[in-house]
Image (tube, rainbow, N blue to C red; front, side, top):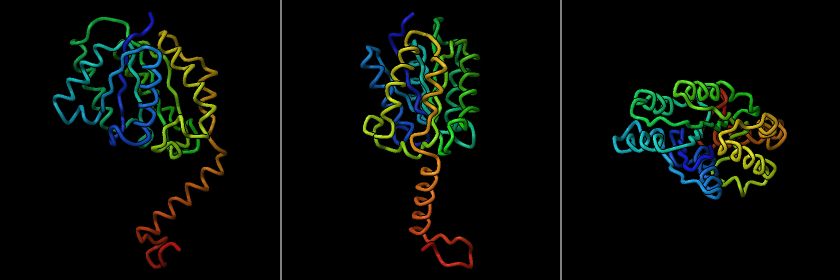
Length: 222
């Protein structure tokens, strides 16, 4: 059955800001363009506010498709997202009986997309626990490059955008994302050596700005 409604869970402590929100907003616009009604809920807001908690539970109940967007935190899901998903599980008896589809997107600051595997498996476990059809997990490395720039304006992602559309087409139909699409989405935005070089330059710049020393007895970063 083709999905008509979707809920996007923003899994970052930053809520509707940052790289996870960047990805979530992209998916929301793409899904709306494909004719779906879309609700957006922040995982951390839902565990801190009763009204937001009800928005989370109500949105899940109404959705045919649930999409989780999250950054990798210590090789797994951020704590607030885990708490939000646990809230849904604890209230499963409130949910109407219909076949829902779950998909997830996880990005990390490591060069390799494979670092997201454990977190995406946790999302799959949630889908199994809730009796949902798991359509697949999209993993991105080099998440530090995503930042706040809309992915549609990020020149290094131009080859990824058609693949994301293909993945969404499969999810909307309730089908698994083709493995070749998932594999292609894991391709780095830039060569790993380039990403590491610029990442180190950025960290060194932040260290200098904040007076951090390489060792306590050395001068601050030059």
